[in-house]
Amino acid sequence: MIMETDTQNQAAEMESFYREYVDSFNEALESGDLVAPSRYFAYPHIILFTSEMGGMRIINDATEYASTLRKGQVTLKARGWARTRVEAVAVWPTTVDTGLIVQRYARCRSDGSVIERGGQCYILRREGEQWRIAVSLEALSKDKEQFRTFIKALAGVADA
Figure 1: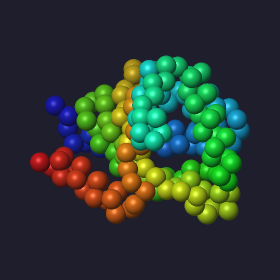
Figure 2 (figure 1 turned 30 degrees about the horizontal axis):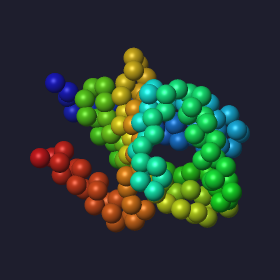
Figure 3 (figure 1 turned 90 degrees about the vertical axis):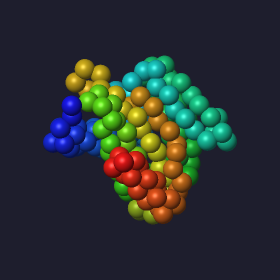
C-alpha cells in the first residue's frame, strides 16, 4: 500500500527528474552534445506523434536517440529556437515504479519571445534507483484552456 507521504515524495522525485531532463535537453541542443539527454530514457523508447508527423517511432538506443534529436535540432534552430521553457507540469505516481507527467512548454527565441507552445505526456518507469522516460507522446493541444481541462479530468479520475 502506498502512503500519501510516499506518493508526494515520489511525485517530487519524478518532477525533479523531469526538470533535469529539460535542462539537459536545452544544454544538448545548445552545445551539440546530443547523446547527453539520452540517459533520461528507457530503451526501447516509444514516441507517439500526430499522424502528420509519422504516428509512432521506436528508439532502440542512445545513438538512435541522438540522431532523432539532431534532426529536431536543425528544424528548431532554423525557426529561431534558443530554449524550451516549461510552463506547467503535473505529476501522477501510478505505482511505486511508474508514473505520468503531463507538461506544457514554450519554445523560445534567445530574446524570450515564444515561437510555439505545445504539450507532452511522459510515462516514466523506475529502473533500479533511476527514473527513465519509457513513452513520450505529443498529446496536448497548444491551447491553455484545453490543457487545464485535461488536468482537471485526470484529477477527477484520480479522486474517483
